[in-house]
Image (cartoon, rainbow, N blue to C red; front, top):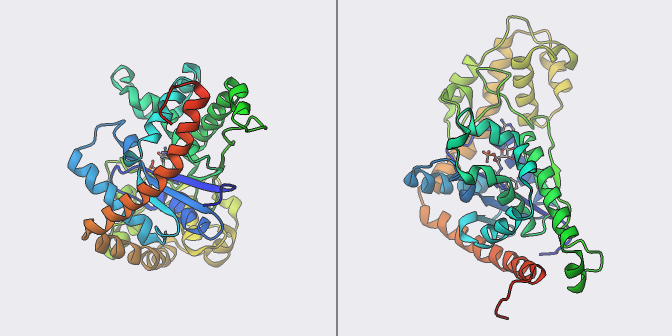
Length: 346
Ligand code: AMP
Ligand code: TRP
């Protein structure tokens, strides 16, 4: 691996990988392989910040790995693994828990959303989640992080942690031969494409999410053609025909979402999609969307099924990826131990 530009991202194995995960994140993971060294992680330590049934967690971990591979990530050229196999993530996260300030974590909107009203009953892990995420990224000194829009705030916190660590330990970092004092880089989020925030098919003001109780709110990567067709046909719309220009979508969240999904799946701009379908009825547009979605997602779902039927293969990919990740991550943690002043065997 060349050290200069490195991509890292993670997806939680919490069930129901959906079109939002695919368009907001995984599609970009696939593209970046051509230009960068990439590390893609199934973040099981993050998953257990909320209760997970152990058998389901195992299954979902293999399913996310299978989705990565089925979508076109090459685990030989790049690295695919699950977080808990590389203990350096948890070790660095502890150091970061001591760098991050309570005030910073108190501002995290994802914690507020996930903890809900009963905050006293949320796990300590859910609260500390962003410092583990910072450790995931910085343990590889990754420079670019492809994510959906909802992770922007966590990336800002990651930069704050990197900066404070660099400042707090500037002398020790320079003593290690890093003249710039920038032991950790400031990682940049890559939030790109027409679908950085895919919305629920039932409510255009709510994010498409793994945890929505209605399965009709999302298209799962494991859905077959019939399920995709039914969900798109039942997707909420309004009575107006589609507009011919993008500004006509501004007050129509459901229409905007479906056009965005079409654009992202076909690799076209929204304006271009509206030039084709503007003025026409929703039913025609929806039929084309079903064909497109089945065409793009069908093969991925089928390949995921084939891969998850062979857990031995998937587990092999994960342990091989973990072995390669460990070498990189341990080097960073050892350097951090020296910087912080921990005694260790050399
Ligand atoms: P998660 O399932 O929370 O681990 O998310 C995995 C990746 O998918 C992250 O980069 C998220 O930002 C992205 N993501 C999740 N939901 C959506 C959505 N509705 N639209 C776009 N991206 C999403
Ligand atoms: N928090 C991310 C999510 O919920 C998952 C994640 C964990 C992640 N660690 C990461 C994403 C590091 C990017 C980089 O979607």
